[in-house]
Length: 124
Image 1 (tube, helix red, strand yellow):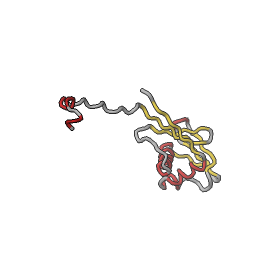
Image 2 (tube, one colour):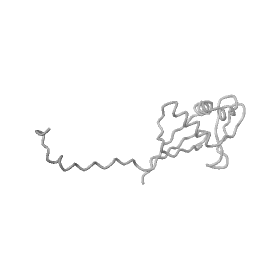
Image 3 (cartoon, helix red, strand yellow):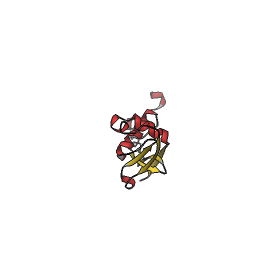
Image 4 (cartoon, helix red, strand yellow):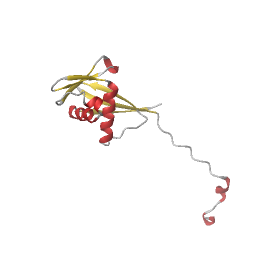
């Protein structure tokens, strides 16, 4: 089955804005100053360390993903609800990877009713 994959890249200013938009449990733990970089801890499933001008903080990957998804919603960046979403770090940038498996199928056209085959334009 085909899989559609989109990647949404976030620069450091957008990451900063996304994390500060998120509810206080993430935004309040972010040190003052602009976000400078992000890096993965313990591979692709571990937490993400965000470095600001003042200090670095390690956040759960799910909270970072939720902040980026909220950022997309507030900025009208469409994300399919049924898609699998994951955050990866590429260099010092965060990437929200959206994977949608399967192609929605159109419902099969209904078979015409027997009486409809005998109608003509004049009958209508």
